[in-house]
Image (cartoon, rainbow, N blue to C red; front, side, top):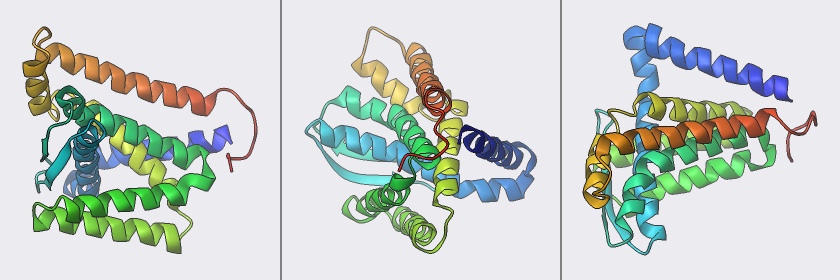
Length: 223
């Protein structure tokens, strides 16, 4: 079991870094949907942070350059702001863990992802591009879940790629969030929060790997 997870993880890492650093224009085009997926997780993290703290979401935008924004009202602002970067780190680790370890939750997790995307696409509608991307990704995930046996590999890839992407992008991607967080948490500057958030993201990933590769020696996945 552990060997199987390790081999899959090494293959995913090879694909991710191969396409990112050696794939050229083709690699960038292949990884482009993954980049948009990471942006979705980030913006959905903002939205969820607002909702669970008593606020509401007005609209969510995913831009063609891979950036995005979420407009929300009320809720707890610090939770809503850090929900983007740290929320996407949590979501990525959860996807990777379920894909690697919990076979019985692979399809339900894909369905949850699809529901989250469709809610974002239509209920928090902002642009045709955002809705088109999320509907297309939803259709792809439903096809994987219902017509193939690659749900495990897809969840592991999306989860691991998401975690790696946000760690690599820590000093660029959340820049606007860090500035907003600095305004709320005035005693600590944005550059310090940047490394705090990065540290939390790395610790989450290390903790996830520790759970996956230590403990039981059971050779079968959790059913």
